[in-house]
Image 1 (tube, rainbow, N blue to C red):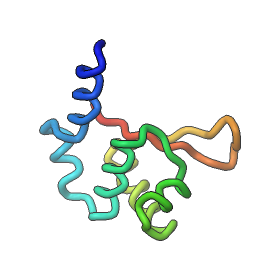
Image 2 (spheres, one colour; image 1 turned 90 degrees about the vertical axis):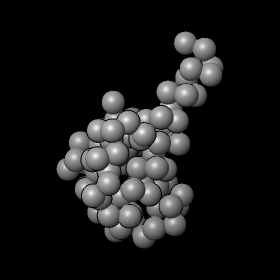
Image 3 (tube, one colour; image 1 turned 90 degrees about the horizontal axis):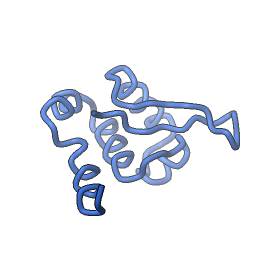
Image 4 (cartoon, one colour; image 1 turned 180 degrees about the horizontal axis):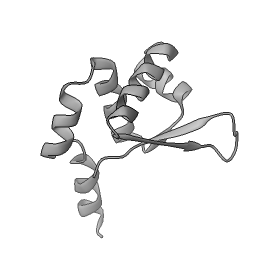
Amino acid sequence: MSVPELSQTNTNRLQDADSTEAVRDLPPSAKLVAKVLEYNETMTQSELADETLLPPRTVRYALNRLEDEDLVDSRFSFSDARKRLYTLDIQ
């Protein structure tokens, strides 16, 4: 896959019809977290809070809403098992 194809694939992740429908009814904080995860592949909750300027509790709520809609995938960090890493999981 060439570089233009790869960048085009990444920029269109939230623009297909199914993804738009799933994100449309979410609160603004969840939309912001999804957009930040779209640009930054994998982030922790604290990184998301720093990047979005949202309080940690709001980021947790947004991630829970995104997980309820199956839009975010989470896994444990190998470097620090106390932290979870979040990635956008949109086909």
